[in-house]
Length: 181
Image 1 (cartoon, one colour):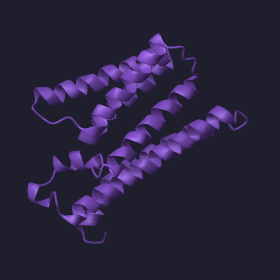
Image 2 (cartoon, rainbow, N blue to C red; image 1 turned 120 degrees about the vertical axis):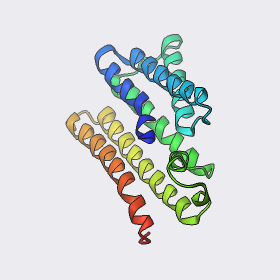
Image 3 (cartoon, helix red, strand yellow; image 1 turned 90 degrees about the horizontal axis):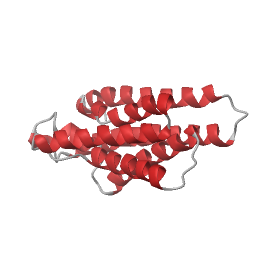
């Protein structure tokens, strides 16, 4: 549940953006991100890489749209959000702290945290999310630069990527625990 809650700012962005525009959507994403960080600090939990990165992404983009000269289309904003999310995930892997690790540690015993299979599982799952976000970025690019391609293609690719990542995240740890990884 924790990892799915971390995507609440993106859901808020998508819903609000759809009905009220990019500025409101980005602001909603920033507010929900801030609320998740406040929740972590209030419960004495360490904030997570994804939650910090999400706040920086949405707050930065909202401020840029409010005070800068941004004239982004809806798809252009989505492209920037999806690319930012992909960057957060890739940076977490490059920093040797795949973003799923913090969520997984909340669900397993401490003695498993340094086990190679546990770490490998988190790299694989984080890689699956990176792939999903990469697909979303490509779908956004197609929708932005190839208007002859029906927009439904991009939407279907985005939905399939997210559903695939969620299903893989729930399936792969059991496979790994069974010793088949």
